Image 1 (cartoon, protein in one colour):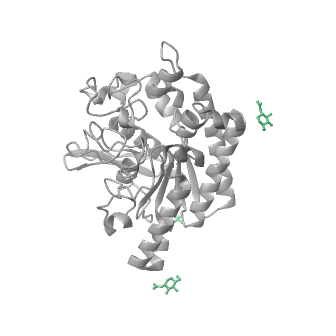
Image 2: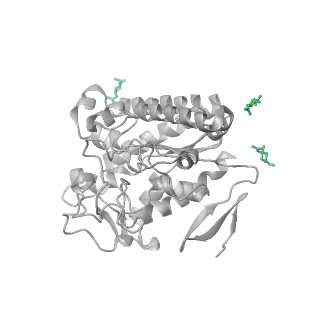
Image 3: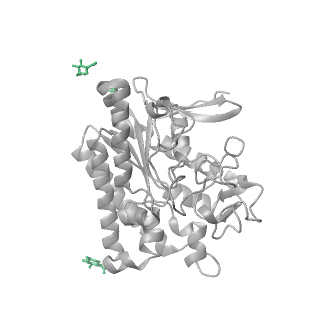
Length: 357
Ligand SMILES: *[C@@H]1O[C@H](CO)[C@@H](O)[C@H](O)[C@H]1NC(C)=O
Ligand SMILES: *[C@@H]1O[C@H](CO)[C@@H](O)[C@H](O)[C@H]1NC(C)=O
Ligand SMILES: *[C@@H]1O[C@H](CO)[C@@H](O)[C@H](O)[C@H]1NC(C)=O
C-alpha cells in the first residue's frame, strides 16, 4: 500500500512490513541517517535498568504484552516506545535496543542504541533518588560507545555516524513529578521558577556536552501535560481525579525555557540543529478529545486499577488489568500505550522533520 501526500518538500509513505504497515518520513535525497541515538528517562528506556537494583524497572509481565508476542524487554509500555517509532519512521530500523542489553551486537551499535534509564531527569538528584543512571552516567556510556565504534570502523566513519545520526533526548518529567512536587528537599532550595531555571540550564549543559561529543541533529522532546498523567490525577487531582493545573503550568513554563535553550544553541552552534518537539499539546488534545482517534479511556492506565500502578506495582498479580489496551491512552499510571506513542511520534516527526534540513 502506498499512500503519499506532499508535506512541504517531504512526503509520507506507508509501507507494509512483516504484516504491519507503518509510516516512514521520506528524507531529502542527499540526507542519510545512519543511526538513532537516545538519552532520557522511561519514555525511551528499552531495558537499561533491568540489572539495576531499583524499583524503576518493568522487565516482567504484563509489560511488553503486545511486543513480539509478549516479551517484557524493560520498555515501559505494552509494546514499542517513542525511540523505536522514531527509528522506524526515519527508515533506520524497527527497534532501538538498550545499550546495556547483554545480547547487543555490533550492527545494533552502528545503527543506534538508547542510553536512557527510567526515573532519571535533567536534575542529577532525580536519577540518584532511585539509584538509576543520571544524564552524566548516560554520557559516560556514550563515550564508551564512541570508543567501541572507533575500534570497529575507524575514526572517520565514527565521526560521520556521530554527526549524521538523529539524537533524541526525552526526559524531565520525573524532575517535577518526583523531585520537586513530591519530595521536600528541592522545594527548600528552589521555588518553582528558580527550579525551572535550574533544570533548563542543566538541559542546556547536557546538550552542549552532546554537541562536544559529535551530535549535530538533536530532537528535544518537551514535557507532557504531566498534571494529566493518571498517577498525578490520583495524587493531587482531588476526589474527581482532575488534571493538576499547577503541574501542567510548570510543564508549560519549563517547555518555553527548553524551547529558548534550543534556539540559543542553534545560534551559538550553527553547524548543529537542536529541534524542540512539542509533546505537550498533541497529548493534551488526545486527553481532551480522544474520540476521533478511537481512544476511550484517558484518565486511567490499563494496568491494574489504572490509578497508581507503574513499574514494580504493575505486575502479573494485578487482577484488573484491561484486556483491550487499544482504547486506552495510558498503559500504566505514567506511560502511554504503544498505540498512543505511535500516533504521537508520527504527528510530531512530520511537524519537525523539515527543521533539520
Ligand atoms: C542537500 O541538497 C540541498 C538542495 O539541493 C542543499 O541545499 C543541501 O546543502 C544539501 N545538503 C547536503 C548535506 O549535501
Ligand atoms: C580520514 O579523514 C581525513 C580528513 O578528511 C583524511 O585525510 C584521511 O585520509 C581519512 N582517513 C581514512 C583512514 O580514511
Ligand atoms: C524565586 O527565587 C528566586 C531566586 O532565589 C527569587 O529571585 C525570586 O524572587 C523567587 N520567586 C518567587 C515567585 O518567589
